[in-house]
Image (cartoon, rainbow, N blue to C red; front, side, top):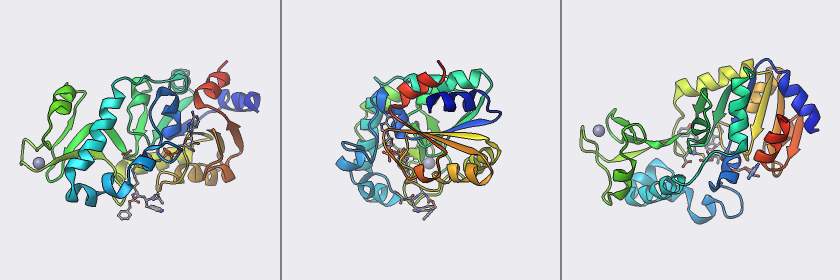
Length: 244
Ligand code: BV8
Ligand code: ZN
């Protein structure tokens, strides 16, 4: 199986990867829907919807600051790094990720499409103001502040620049991802339960456009029924074997 996948991948002319929380699990980032995942401890409707933020912005910020804090000690694992290697070889054309954890970029992958935003990006809940806390080097200051952050331009509350449930994905980003999916001859689907839409359409679009779907996961997912190859195991281990 692995040998077959490795051969297909190294001969691919337009490989893309579609990733979810499982690719970062070996780095120590908690997933969402697994045992011990974030949605066991937190309710989506309390921390990841626009209504939750209106009701109780403090609680939402607590959730995201906890995740920002956690990210400080987290590094990319062999799965992220192998994708970068495939990009450097000219095989991988883009990583489309549902993760907000920044690890694909930290691993050095250049073409990363972050469908659900980035943990280090914040924006005003009212005006156009945006800031990336890594770029402005304000992360530590931001984490120390106990009050709910306010927009320097209009004074409204600052919120995480991520896509919450019930919110549309940025149209341009989504269209770009869908176009890549149409062009792909192979899509590597890594560590996602395939439950969240429209993101989970990506492998279906690849398939409908005549492409091949190779899935890596510890267990079967919503994508498995359309996967041409299913590689069961840890993302880091399997990805390392693919480029050996
Ligand atoms: C929207 C950012 C329009 C924030 C997240 C059909 C079409 C369109 C929409 C819908 C639809 N049906 C329902 C909807 C609505 C909804 C939706 O999809 N609901 C689902 C849950 C039923 N979608 C939306 O609301 C989207 N917007 O549709 O806009 C609109 C507008 C107004 C009104 C109505 C509609 C927006 C969704 C975005 C939500 N935001 N993230 C944040 O992270 O805080 S999504 C959330 O789930 C996570 O953040 C993550 O990004 C995403 C996906 O999860 P996974 O990555 O797959 O993680 P999960 O834990 O589930 O799975 C982990 C997997 O890894 C497992 O399979 C496990 O086995 C595997 N694994 C674990 N360890 C390893 C491993 N594999 C390999 N190796 C390992 N070591
Ligand atoms: Zn503002």
